[in-house]
Amino acid sequence: MATEIKNYSPEERYRLIGKLIEEIKLRRYSYQTGKSYISIVKDFLASSKTPREFLLSYSTKSKSTMRSVYFALKFFYRNVLNAEFEEKLPLARKFLKLPLVLSKEEVNKMIDSTNNLKHKLVIMFLYYAGLRLDEARNLNWQDINFDREIIHLKTAKGDKERVVFLHKKLIDVLRMYGTKEEGPIFISQREGKYNKRTIQQIIKFSSKKAGIKKNVTPHTLRHSFATHLLESGADIRYIQQLLGHKDLKTTQIYTHVANKDIKKLANLL
Image (cartoon, rainbow, N blue to C red; front, side, top):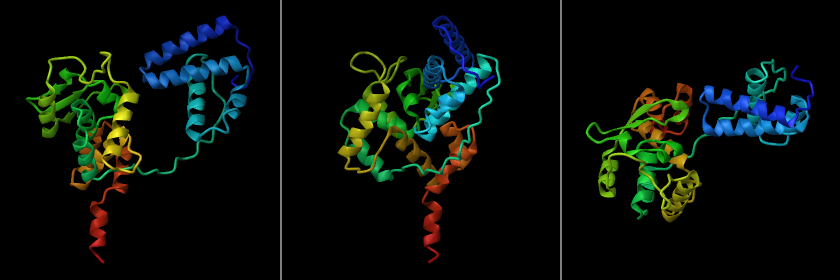
């Protein structure tokens, strides 16, 4: 029963965490999701609490944290213990939080004010290809097809490959940067791939240098990419494909921030 308290020995905990890791790998969950589930389940096994008591210990945390704990325990019970997870968490619907979007002028200011060519490319890939932070970080030269002017993303979210266009402005800067046949595009001074923190700092520094007062993140540029395409008349289903969204509803949030139809309404007055 999911409500029982069970004191697990260190050996049994070790075995169960090993099984958990196997189940996560079999489902090819992302590194971040796996890391989160393992950490939560380790704490749960060491707590000697019922699932309900363990969930209540997170009641003062954010809704997203509570959801993570709930789904981690549910996954553990169903796939590792092969038991029903009886706890029900009233998962309130999320309020619609509109994404922060930059104007085209603000994006251009960020690019133009960035003198480091590698940093400039990071910004341009996030905006001109609508990449996620991890997708830009893991981008390889062999993913770039200059002849067909496309980027073939093989490390997209959820292990789903997708193809996006290779913007001419990106081609020009890539030629200046110096192209290679293979290997990561973004390598740090220590010869390793850029980490997340590095890219976040590049965006933060570039936005400040451009005089932008907003809290700009790497994902802000992806939001701006989608919104600017929508405002320019691109079909939302094409935008969905470019972003790699499974559900069209996820893409439709950009209809709430696009100016195209709002401006038409203003002209009626």
